[in-house]
Image 1 (cartoon, one colour):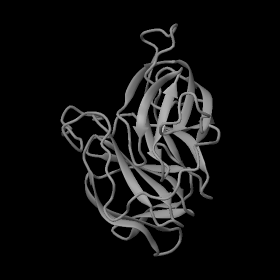
Image 2 (tube, helix red, strand yellow):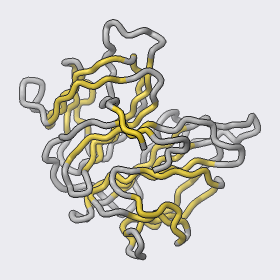
Image 3 (tube, one colour):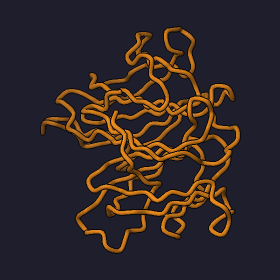
Image 4 (tube, one colour):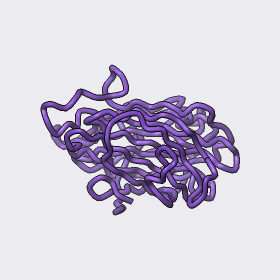
Length: 264
């Protein structure tokens, strides 16, 4: 994956000089277990009471520069932000910004560029992103590893046959289950992004699902999606709830651009 200095935390306030047709699409996942936060951009409150496990709806925003401040709930805007960054948002990007724990449990921010290329006819795209405080993992389908040795904060992707996939996440090279098993519904012409988040040590690992729709490469493709609404569809695999403490969002924001299909 190629890193750049781009991304944003659900930015809805536009820079004054941004061209109307110079836009990007940004979603935000709060994947740090613990306290609720408030997100400010250019001095305006954008995401009040933003709770762990929440995936925001995609926002279309003009390209430009944004001053981001993230406060513990109720402490802004006059308090000291847990993190403050000036972020450049490029035109044409479709990105998901993730506040999450590093492999060693430190809060950080990363952004992933979503692959919006057309999905081959008769296929569905599956991407898995490791954003949990946990060692490298293997992602299995029906007990067979599909993505191997996936480390935080990397991702892996493949175009697969549509259908219901019984999947689980195990510690790399072992049969020790960290998450699942659970059923993933993969529909033709969609890109399904699964985020593994939380903390293995605190036993609150969970997953969130994001769906990118209308990526059919042929008119005969079946209209796909996880629900009647457009944009992101997020859900948690059963049996895993978020918890633990949010020490503050920190670190350098980095957009991890993947090659076609988002290969790690």
